[in-house]
Length: 282
Length: 272
Image (cartoon, rainbow over all chains, first blue to last red):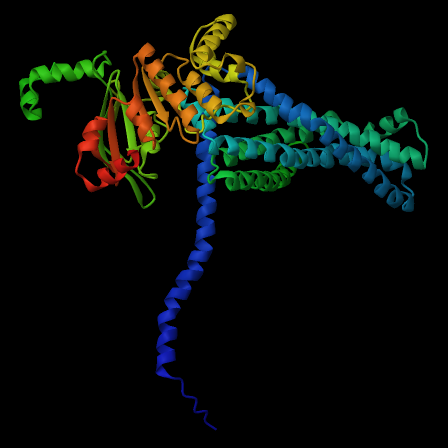
């Protein structure tokens, strides 16, 4: 049985003519985002180089650095401490029921301390600071860009990469490990409070059990991992802020993209750094 | 020393060559800013298309033109905030495209810039705003800096605003403070981007008077970008009208008024 289906020539010709344009459209829809991504990385690299070059030139902006240490460090402390405390309490409550089920209740302090110091403290601090500080830097520098304040700094013969970017990046790098220590401390403290409410245990005993199996390297490498988090948050916040375009809408976009990108890169860096720490500090 | 063959090739008389070297050294009497064949585009949009312009020392040049003709871009090119696509900009005899960062900083110290929205640093007080360039480019002590800031604020009639934050003062006051900051390092060239934009006629008049007074006192070369014909008439020695990426006409206000070019007539009609 033959199927005599006749397709009008006009339609066939149209399809053939449209085929290359469909391929081109598909290719460009794949290529354009990839191209933008590569461009963004390239510009970030140039920005990092300019900041690095500016950082070694005198004068050093000590006063602005102090202001940023306060802005990024002291003012983030309550939020970081609260986040650390909440995570500590939740971890304690969640772990307790599981450990009791397996008859390993006495392992709770060690499990809690290990978990907070190794992973929860650094990553929670990184994400909380990227939310608070990343948005702040992105919005502040973005607003300075659209109101020509960055141009005014440059026109005054002052390098904005040093005055604005380097001070903020350095403050993030210096403050992240300290904030992580605060988050770790609050996490352990509130982990103990949550534990002792269910089954009273002295703080000294809790700490003794918690830290009995840990060494200095357990503590050092994860805490200093946050130096990289600080570098990421500061660098991306400043970069996104200083390249802002398009008025107030652009400022909003810079603030949002600073948070999204710095959080994303903090998580990616965490995966890579955890692997590296496991290799170098087994 | 130029060889005779080179002299012939360049077709430059020896006297002219010597004069040009004097300008390059930045001696007084030479032009403050010389722009030759300046091109600048943003994407496909051509903003400046071969602009030639000279600003003499001590003179005030007003730049007029429709919105988007590249007047503000020209100011930013002069101070090196943007890079030209091609052409040359000589500031006190120095080609700014060829300067390194330190040389550019040295040039910028000689140029005061008043931005359209004043661009005061909103995290710093009025005093800190004006002291900002002084702190970084002079050896002044804290008390000397404070005295200089007070003197500059007195010049613009803003002594009382010393401790105020930029957000707490009006637009006109911000322009005055911006002007004081632009004058902090005693520049020899002043670039003013729409100094009277968005201000009421009385405040605009006050700003014009202030600019005239400061020019008399400091003897600077000034380039003023403005849409305000009355302001241009009041403060400028010479006016240049930008149109379609180029200088359509330049001369005194009277020269422009006498022009029979259709666009110039249309533009100047706003004054009557």
